[in-house]
Length: 380
Image 1: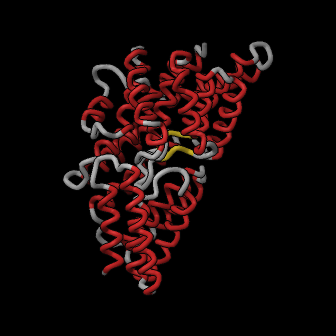
Image 2: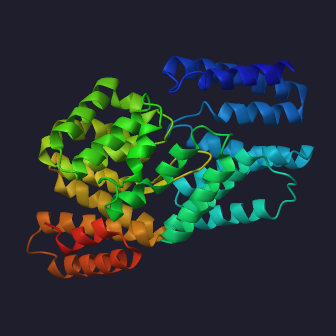
Image 3: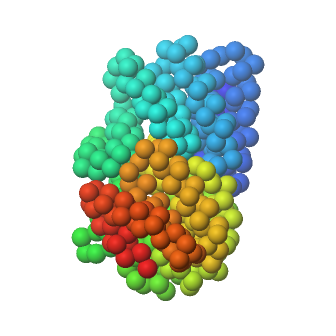
């Protein structure tokens, strides 16, 4: 009982405010260390599973990713031992996020299949909505946007009355798609409504507004939000609850703004650099993926004026997107790589640039990603 109460206290501290501060996270981790230690000494598997699951909520950022994957695996083993299907669901959810961040889509699909094969019995609506979100996210990766939107809407319906952030989950699920369709701005843009219903303290709101204003052509408003994030501290933005999504959206805004955002690009690049080689995935429940982190690092390098570094990152983004088997992310990587090559070596890679742009435009048009198709047709 002491182990479980201690773990629960750590969990409550994390979510006691809209945005956990570093002090709260450190205290939560200390409490979870105590809870896990007590449960291990007792050999109480049920208490250990409870404590480990609570601990996961305090392990934010790229640094603890290996621990999260190992803990997700252990949670699954404990759940099988004690017959706790809810704990098993959480183990699957944690593992899905970490495996997808590694770009291992095959392992993610195997994890989903293993969960579906379980005899879970009645599932709480909150957990059911998580499952719909994950399935929608994987559909988006494959470019099946209609299916993804239907599943995302289903997640909203199931979560009604159980999750006050369900609409925010839907917004971050669809964010990348809306962006590349050109649907972030305009009078009918759903994303504005999503932002209005998201707690304003989240750095994600300011980061998303950076991109919205940049895409709308309001550079000064976008820069204002970049200033607010810089004042908060990029290290604090990196440790928010989105596992890199806030950094990615701010980086995307810098990519749109170009030279005017140069003063923000270098410190933002340093904050996001640890994510290189991974996909940016909102953590469990793995509600959304906005593609390879190298894509955004490449945009930042371009805004910094370092085209050699930008090329390195865009090549890496294309490799990961292909490994993930994601046509949308492949097309986006092709466009940015081609644009970088055109700027860096105007007369050196014409054939490859043309091939990349042609492939990206055809793919984007087929998927209805109008912004991306327009960028491929007129790369600048």
